[in-house]
Length: 622
Ligand SMILES: Cc1cc2nc3c(=O)[nH]c(=O)nc-3n(C[C@H](O)[C@H](O)[C@H](O)COP(=O)(O)OP(=O)(O)OC[C@H]3O[C@@H](n4cnc5c(N)ncnc54)[C@H](O)[C@@H]3O)c2cc1C
Figure 1: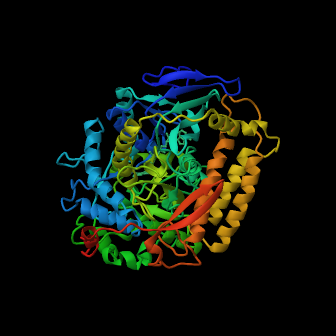
Figure 2: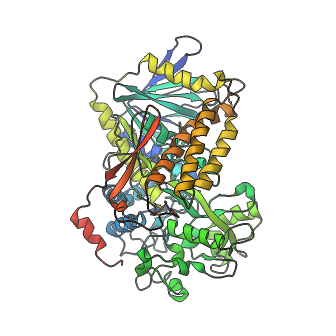
Figure 3: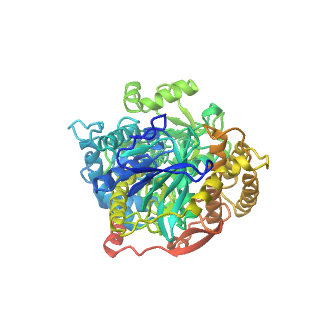
């Protein structure tokens, strides 16, 4: 394994050479077949698959191995294994996923995902993951919003940690090269084809080039562009921006998921996630009058399958077949909007949220066993004992449904040799992702991406090579903030962008506000070009932020332009000026491309779902 902390030259398989055309340009290069950018669940699974397919494979990650965002995942992995409800199967999971995404999902991805998720979970178990068990000793499965049956395989509320631990151990066992604290700033090309990656070591600031005919982007989401978010510092949308810059396209960028339950207090932890498992385990939402308000917000779309009395809602936990789902377990977009409306109507909590109550619904022992992280999170950060008191919660920017447009079966982007997977890819979740469907997405499509990238690389009769001019250009772009004397501060631009995105392109949008956001983004672009960085290249966080801002601005503009274009409300895109869901808009995806730095949006008809799958939606929800 290659480590950035000093011993960074000890690669095991990558052919290595030093390229030196002068002090400024001196950098190391390595040759691979497949380079995976990102060491979260999707990147690790992709790298394992590529390696097992015989490709010389490397993983690059801008944080440490084991620290990727996936480690924060709490609630579980959605897979129709039928361990708790034998009635569950891939068809029901497929239907739930499509309905959760308001039918804008790529149907083929949703089908593959529902069909293959159980095998991928069992595979994790074979590789050593220790899931919670049912009384019969099967993998336990819990309830989550929008899922007809309890189907989330989990490890308490620390599922991501177990997933990362298992995949990381396997990747290391296989001897896959890992470049830690190494940030990719450019995709290199040879003609139309991908030729590798260019980036820098965060510790030393020196440059590194990995040559490879296939690159898989597994860089995660974009949440850091929003002031209030559950996301970690890594989520600056680098993969989305790298793909656009390389000639790829993005899909569904207008759809940003605001998770209903983020912490609101203390301010220093505002946005931190409270897992949906709290509601899955029976937690209910109340306003300042003590009212269980979700019964007032059941949309026509989900009326048939949602309980409309407290009695029926509560019976559901024991009997899913004869009762309808509690309204707290509607899909996230519905619950987030309801909370937002209660707060706006003045029925919020003292710190601007609503109440989430598990204390009166579960015993203290159950809470400690099933939600240990939540207990500690509130005790340590807010001095709230959730076994005795309710939590204060409000929506937080959480997940981007939009990502690199890929082929459903192979995860290939439109640029030859480029692949994308996990939160960096788009299409699978349509306009709204169901909880638990990300972790399953990572491992289902991670495997496929790795296999297909390896196959593609093996088929190339000549290795693509980036020109030295392209590399010089990447170096110049990376060093620009040191050479600029514009005097702008990277952190100031970043913070102001986060304010604009949260306030003007947040949970409820209007055309006028989005236009204003776009005007501000144009100004930020001008300021970003004038950012000046002091000091040297060795561990210089100001420089890192200066480079991250470029990705953040690109994805912010993509979100804003797509959101302005879609004149309806659907899933993670709610417009005050177009509050209805419009069937005509249900026929198209919006595709984002970039030419000479300018972003364009085009409409693309949804692929036609085959009749056998269509017929699943004619049956009553069971
Ligand atoms: C608090 C929280 C709880 C969640 N709980 C659940 C849950 O219970 N179930 C569920 O299904 N989903 C959950 N999610 C969502 C899910 O965790 C994420 O969508 C998923 O982990 C993303 O995985 P990934 O592999 O796409 O990316 P990540 O795990 O984020 O990995 C991205 C990787 O890319 C690297 N990277 C990024 N940019 C660069 C660059 N320029 N150069 C090099 N490396 C780069 C990062 O360092 C990192 O290694 C949760 C999310 C959060 C925030």
